[in-house]
Amino acid sequence: MKTAIVIGAGFGGLALAIRLQSAGVATTVVESRDKPGGRAYYWERDGFTFDAGPTVITDPDCLKELWALSGHDIAEDVELVPVSPFYRLSWPDGTVFDYSNDEPALNAEIAKLNTRDVEGYRRFLDYSAGVYREGYLKLGAVPFLDFTSMLKAAPALARYQAWRSVYSIVSGYVQNEKLREALSFHTLLVGGNPMATSSIYALIHKLEKDGGVWFAKGGTNRLVAGMVRHFERIGGTLRLGDPVGEIETRGDRVAAVRTRSGWRGEADAVASNADVVHSYRDLLGGSARGRKAARGLARKRFSPSLFVVHFGVRGTFPEVPHHSILFGPRYKGLLDDIYKNGALADDFSLYLHHPTATDPAMAPAGHATFYALAPVPHMGKGKIDWDVEGERFAERILDAVAERLGIPDLQERIVTRFHYAPTDFAADLNAHLGSAFSLEPILTQSAWFRTHNRDDVIGNLYFVGAGTHPGAGIPGVVGSAKATAGLMLEQLAPA
Image (cartoon, rainbow, N blue to C red; front, side, top):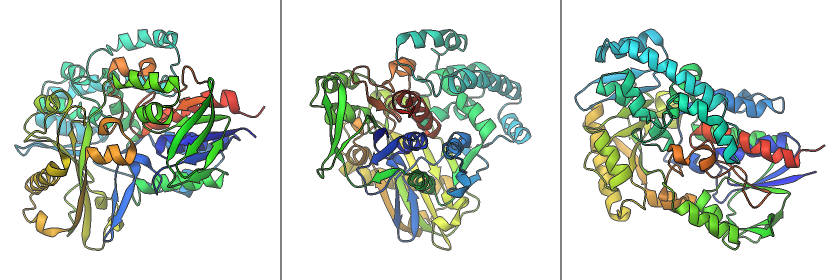
């Protein structure tokens, strides 16, 4: 039987491992932390369950497929529940916009901002459907190993003006500035600047409209647990709490994976779901290929980091939806501070996650679980001492949430709280510069320009996850697993 080792038990690593194991490849996943999930880690404190993220599940079919490969049903392990509205968007002047795929309701929301933009939105959705078809359905799980494959995709990308930004495209369809923000902020959920990210990422709107927005009952951690349960059910092996120290090479092949505990595993192929810079610079640092690739990656642009305040409070808040976007007074200026200037701005925009709106069991009875997330510069942009600034920034965020939600005594209601900063992404996840989403998703760092799903030199070394094609987000990393599995099974599948 052929064998494979997957480094890292994030969504991408687990999805790849399930695909390999389902195809008859004996697969071992090696994870450094005490729990699986990668960025979808979680904590249990004082009776509250806190998901690290991600918390927005789209395209549930890409997840269901992982179970169907072996004749199983995701419902055996995970209960997915719909979330509506998808997001409640609000601005400092009190404007509120509920975004969903309920067409009459959504048109009414748009008309409140600008009646003329209802037709503009319809045309934008047609555009979104086109890039969804070309960029997601046709190319989302197709590896780009050579420039020829990129050239084949170029006509479709050109037809949809992929060199333009999402914000630029949106602005061509709708006039109201708030609506432009409402239709372009989604790129931030995968680490992209709406002012710079390729317009191909407008496909997210079609993805949400057709598939909806979902939540795993019990939290995203329950989806991870379900993936692990299914992987082990079909014969896979998971090693937890055992960081990989080295990927051993012999010539142009991977020979083995060695962990810091001393465990050594040989395999016919190895795939890394770890940070791409960490994989090349640290795990392959003993090889010329590793050192060269790491130098090349270090010159690329990386997505920003995140600052997340987790807090559990007394009281329930049925008026607060599951997902909220609290826009600040600036949009482009704030994005410039995050992506270009490396400044920790006095103002901020927040994503507010309120899982007990959907599943009250994630907090003790009569309580609620929240997190408030602010995009911030990565550690290569901003010289911010998070040991000093972290607590101050958390206080400012909590004060802003209290004001925007109309809960003046929010801080007094807090039972437990903690925050997660760029330095934690770097320490816990080996994330280069503390980036939360790996390489920034600009056109010149997409598809063939991204880390390839199979290494160009080491023939049995593969990559999966946010740093490779197609990119970050649950559908993205699950798509990367499909692309990478296809390549690996060409080499490994039993005759």
